[in-house]
Image 1 (cartoon, rainbow, N blue to C red):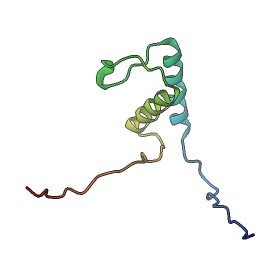
Image 2 (cartoon, one colour; image 1 turned 90 degrees about the vertical axis):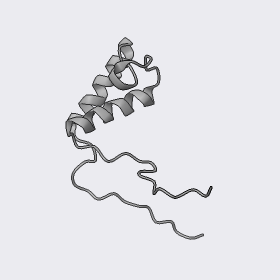
Image 3 (spheres, rainbow, N blue to C red; image 1 turned 45 degrees about the horizontal axis):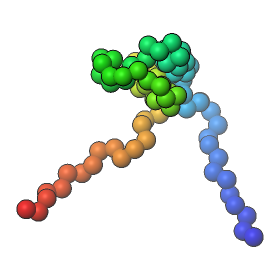
Image 4 (cartoon, rainbow, N blue to C red; image 1 turned 135 degrees about the vertical axis):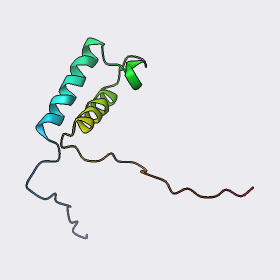
Length: 84
C-alpha cells in the first residue's frame, strides 16, 4: 500500500475575513425571515436554499471589499471564431 500525502494549507491568515462571515450570517437571517431575494435589485424570487443564501452573502462581502477568495468556476473563456 502506498502512503498518501495530505495536502496541507499554509498556516497564517484565514481565508475569509470577519466582515465576510458577518455578511453571510446576515444573509442567513434574512433567508430565515423570508426577506432574502435573488437577482438584481431583489426582483427575483425568495431564496429558499441555504447554499444560495451563503453565495449571496459572500457576493455582498466581495462587493464591500471584505477578504473573500475569488469565485471558483470557468472564469473568462477565450472567444473562438465559429466556422460557418
